[in-house]
Amino acid sequence: MSEGVHTRTGKEYGPWAASVGLASAVLDQIPRSIDSFLDVGCCYGYLSYVVRTQFPSVTKIVGVDFYEPYLRMLEKFRFFDKLVKWDLCQVPLPFKDREFDAAVAIDVVEHLPKEAGSRLLVDIERVAKKVVVTTPNYWNKNERSTLDGNDLQRHQSLWRIKDFRNRGYKVHGIGYRPPFQSMAFILPMDSKVPWLCATILAVK
Image (cartoon, rainbow, N blue to C red):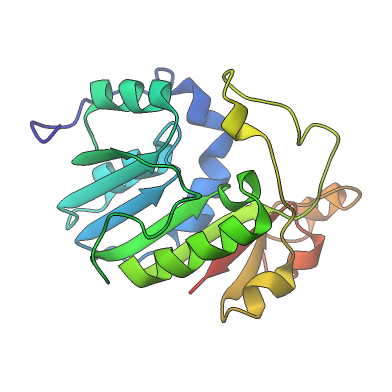
């Protein structure tokens, strides 16, 4: 996977299209000077693709996921330097302390039981100098559904703003949850009023 990066159009990366706003808000929190990047629960890998193509100093991108079809797909695209199949309920992760300049867990912790998600956050903080996490800010009727036939996509926990602030994270919000969607016309996508928002953006 170190031979190079395949160049793809936006259309070919169709599953990522809905995540553009989220990716932009997350990547705004990460210095462009990073050398190494860890994508925990990398799924389709859209965020790492952007890092590979837009962060000129990055030399190592590692993705972690437990769903084999995602990993097989990402091996074909070859913008990860390494892919690791790992059950995220199991810690420690197979990495050294502070091995990465930055790590992200994008819409991951809600797929784990709350205690397992808490342990995962502690370990991500161990292996990375900067951590960015996102998770939904509310529960809806579809949260128990699966995606791509992947049972791991079921939501198992709901996280609150205070869960992250109590851990020392700075919290923002992305988008607007019901019934506040109309606020998008008067407030920016990355909001300083996170309790209004659909997605929690936590940075440490």
